[in-house]
Length: 291
Ligand SMILES: [Cu+2]
Image (cartoon, rainbow, N blue to C red; front, side, top):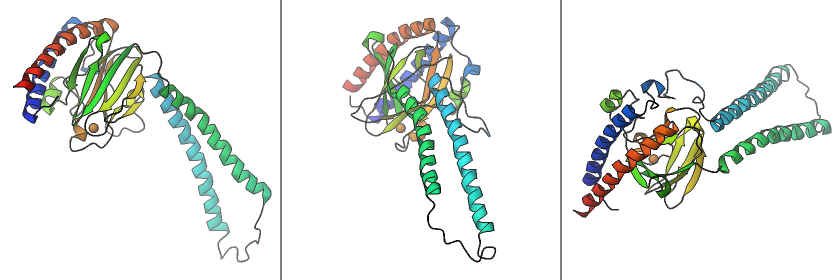
């Protein structure tokens, strides 16, 4: 589908208006839709560490990261202490006649075997985690995500509605109006049901992007001409944010990802509305590209 810039902008404005209406409709019909207070994982001043995890996978990643931090800390302290001992006890002044020892079999075996054991100890949980990510469980829903320059497109395949829509960043006033953070809030969120296995097929048009949702432990490259796959299972309703995580060009910072996790019922309602709404947008798009 070839589009000129102005058509594209017109289309996006129209979709943005439609989305605002849909959001209002959804909020009215579904009590489960989270309010601004349920906006999760917004960066805070002086925040440290990883974003709070909201899926089992993300929790496992954070645990692994924290475990590694201990290993690294102990090794760094150990090496630091050895270094200080060398500097202060074995310098030229204090130790004018250095030992001529050049071999110590026990020591050499130890400093080879102990690091190997440490690395194997790290590798086991690391590969277990990788396996959890790579082997996708039976999906409840599948969403295809396409990175464009510079916005995301979400496609719900035929058996789940058969529609697609684009998701663009809201400007400052629009974001404040709905109580969401500027630079993260979008017009059309990706909506998924809580507790469902969501398989995400990730690709791109034009240049590389990366679909990243830290609170679910998801980061997948979006490569033109290739379909990558990842998955997540959200355990709590709310709005979760991510950002494109591959330096893709001038709009890289302005293509946030927002996922709204809702109850099964709210999801079914959203599907109905989205199907109606984005089907009409699709017509519009065809009109727009034929004039
Ligand atoms: Cu990008």
